[in-house]
Image 1: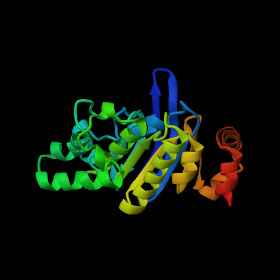
Image 2 (image 1 turned 90 degrees about the horizontal axis):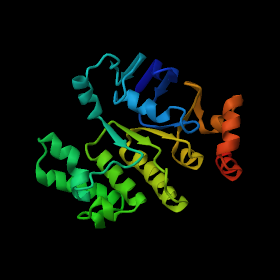
Image 3 (image 1 turned 45 degrees about the vertical axis):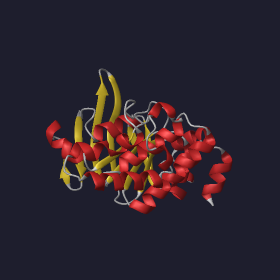
Image 4 (image 1 turned 90 degrees about the vertical axis):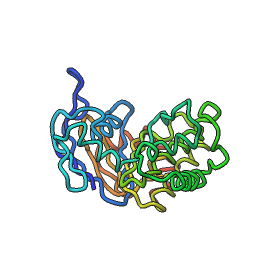
Amino acid sequence: MIELYGVKKSFDDQIVLRDIGLTIPKGRTTVVVGQSGCGKSVLLRVILRLTSLDDGKIIINGMDTSEYSEHEMMSIRRKVGMLFQGSALFDSMTVWENVAYPLLENGNVPIDEIDKRVLELLDFTEMGDAVDKLPGALSGGMKKRVALARALVANPDFIFYDEPTTGLDPITASKINTLIRNTQEKYGATSVVVTHDMVSALTVGDLFAFLDAGIIAFVGEQNEFLNNDVAQLQKFLKKAAPDKYVEKFAK
């Protein structure tokens, strides 16, 4: 479980996170939605302290990490698999090397065990035929799948997805959404997805949080999310969610 209390973050005189309160429950997929530029990705980075925290508390698995040093945060980050918006693969490494990297860096995992784990995850993400390829030879969707395999390789407690379908065509995006859903069901990791893509959000989400004006203005299950009485969220949904998807998921 991850708990946020009064989390604040500004850049110079621009307030991004004003007063964030949110509980991310264990074993479910929490989707944080909001307009582009509202601070969704900043929220993920603050939780992992890839971006510094101005104020507030962040509790991860019962531990208050708010004052953790960079060294102390390393043990927390090892429990988190991160799918970055741009995939963030190493261009000079093969697919196998990219996925294996977290375990190779660990230094305590036998190479045959690493190979078994890497091949298992590449098979799960339908990238088994690309073991020896370099990222430059892959499409955007293929890179996302390799990046997901890497995020899973160390058996994380949490998986963070930063705009997982950005830049993908609808068919490829649909495949990524299905993969995110299958990942949660198979591995049971606590997942956090930040996105402004409502088709993706409605496909993968169990719990929904709406970020607006630096606060979490709404938290609820999917049906509550689609039938809310929060004016700003209704305005966002009207603009961001195609009616046919709202009707499909609201049933």
